[in-house]
Image 1 (cartoon, rainbow, N blue to C red):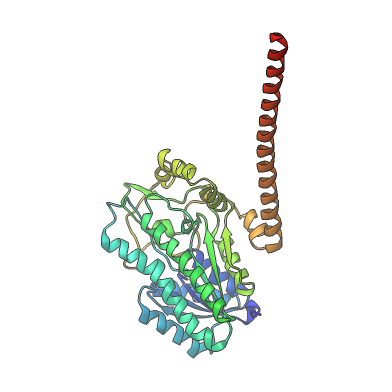
Image 2 (spheres, rainbow, N blue to C red):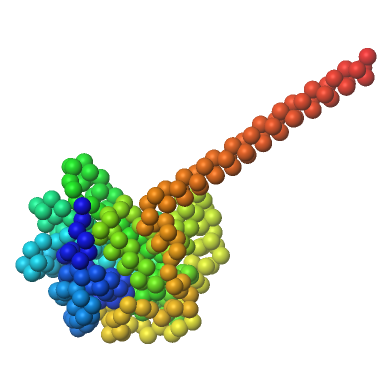
Length: 361
């Protein structure tokens, strides 16, 4: 069984802003020890002070997750300071808003190196420690875009698909080996964080934005903290994201139309705010590193779906079971109706034949 949060040692990448920063503060309030990793030293120092002020312990380690040697050094730093790693959270991520033709090979490679290779490196480093400990949890923060592709973020979508596939493969490998190490994937919908201030954009003068509705980063932090103590296969954050996932499963052509033909895939990701054309793709951006972004106007205060169902497996099972039974009942009704129509048709045809026979006599 995982330790209580107050007793955990957690390595957290992408800790300087957004979801990572919100998670660090959540863990600090719970009394955890947090090893904070990101590229911007002063932002990390700020987060470390906040974590300690809230009652936690913090160790900032400047890290570029795209470099294996730096991830390896991060793991060593955690062990040297705290002696073990209970949970490793891979959260660092970057993006670019552009057409496929506008996206340079260099930009595409960088996104894949940070978003996918960074999680592969982090998972490997965590496993090297946790396998010896015979305990531990790995949490990979992906995206609902790991389930379906969104236009103008094609490489980002590809990287998150990769994270999902990699995490599933690792889980099955651990199961086949009888390993006690757990691995969870967190799939957030659009989240109101500085991610959109920091993303590179080639889509004109407007700053990119999440497809509405968005959700606060604290909702994801709560899901991550929950998974630290209660490892799950997957947690989707945001009811809108879950709806898109279900639509992709049930009728992908409809989602093609919705995000492609209607133009929503582009219009829905362009805000009315001017873009400062600063980004963090290859180096930390100069813009503020904080928890929240600038899209509170389209952001829900929380995700009731996530709180009620995703963090309560029994209720989620009941919901899915009810949905399945409802679908079967609908299917039975449709097929039953079709059978009745065929039966009625045969009966009417027989009656017409009988009337014709009487008339002829």
